[in-house]
Length: 413
Image 1 (tube, rainbow, N blue to C red):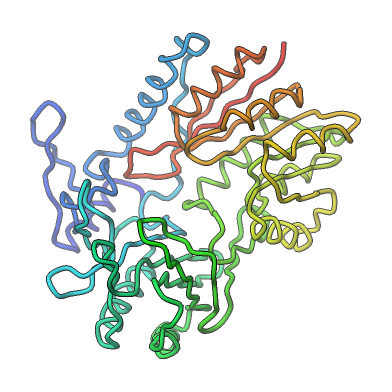
Image 2: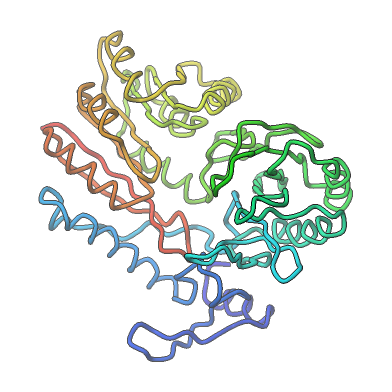
């Protein structure tokens, strides 16, 4: 599905292939494989051949690094390409609004409250697109009002869909403005009757105004509230509301590369910060003596413990807490710390957490980032504290977009 011939077939089948302009103004013979192009802003590189996408992402990393003295001039290697370049998104979050009297599920247009419907998105798995199109019709039929943040009216705010490529199963979470959803049970039954591969329909209640997606309250409308995916030899469960990588195919390559890069011998103690449900911890645990992992989400930590038991990783300890407050007490009770893994949100490591990380004194740090600018800023901080950046490797976690995932290895001389 990743080669150009197949992409052009996709475009022809949907009748939306277009000849985009190159940056120099000339026409390209490459047809964007998307019925929503050029109106959707979610995949700004989808009109480019894949090698050019990779080149531009590599340049984005290089430009971010060039802004800092310790990183300027560093050679950025080519990206590790994505094994699957269309239909790869295991996690799909869509805004639900009303457009011209009809239900739309998609993305906000920049600087507006208008939602661009993307219910035939080529980077979403086909079953996800089928469910979204059906769900929009059913929402309209049942009279469930899409939310409008301008006047705080309506109810259905977002859809969050998780797809398991290993099991070919889907869970659907409906984010609503109010806890009462009288039509919820009927909608859940209709979804399951139409799509037997839907294993759970969940409601999340977000009663706050604004564009924050998640509220604190979850309830299961039908089925179960988790979905399982296989990444390498790991079976990982993801409940509604926790973070998961959107692209499990590239995620596996990244985790395997981290393990190869640090080359654990079996006696090391590892600390994994911002661990989520534990995939990197569990990968490293296979070759480490002990892994201590921290995340501020109690749900993620509870899930990580389940994932450790499920995969027979008895040498992992998962702790819920803020990195800035939790690292030091754990470090004080460790006779040694050989490796620290840092995988923060897009904004990077905040100052108090950075102080705790540097004070821990690990001889090696692996930093995993989805934002080159915050990564470069934090690597500069670490360099000023005595670390050297030994290796950098970007990965294509989000084909067709301008986003890039980067892993860096730092060592103390």
